[in-house]
Amino acid sequence: MTGTDTGVGKTLVACALLRAFASAGKSTVGMKPVAAGAEEGRWPDVDALVAASTVRAPAKIVNPYAFDPAIAPHIAAELAGTRIEIDAIACACEELSRRAEVVVVEGVGGFLVPLNERDTVADLARRLALPVVLVVGMRLGCLNHALLTRAQISASGLRCAGWVANCVVPRMPHLEENVRALSDRLGSALLGVVPFRPGATAAEVGELLGIDALIEATA
Image (cartoon, rainbow, N blue to C red; front, side, top):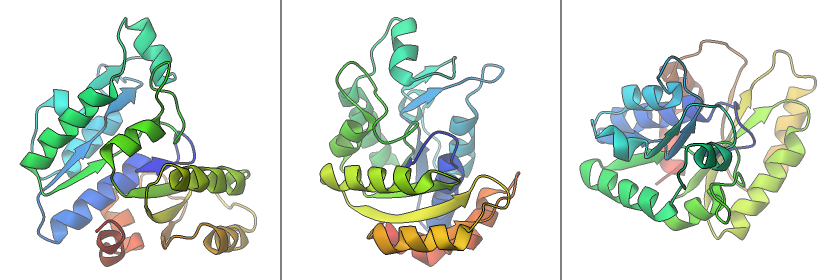
């Protein structure tokens, strides 16, 4: 699971995906390899993924790297005196795959966000070799961001299983035209359009996207 930016609804869609697979009878677990931005000692994205999972797993493999400041992960790691290691994340993901039939991995920030001095989220995605669902935050500028991200997914040799148009601002001008422009150019299935609805739950989003579409897109 990746997005055009931070704060575009990756966690919400990831939780909807977890609940969709659970409804289909699969055991599920969410993974947040890197979390940056604690709130009162908790990482909300991680907590949401855990709540949406049917399998309980140790926190260290669900979220191998957690940092307090809401800043770029490689900078947060440097400040914490550590280094984000892709191999360690891959080992954690493999362990989760032994515990659950479906592992939903939520990225951090956008697809090319640095994880260390060399690797990016794209490198991690290549290492895990999972199909990618792209969450597009529908707002001014999203066309360029979405198309660049989609091109990078292809350049990484990965399959884009589909995309979600998530309305992150109220009453985006010409929303339908923007969605149509992306549908014509992204070359992957539109799984659904999530209207601007602060406080929407993963269950509500799952209904908007359609469980069958979500499962088929990531099969």
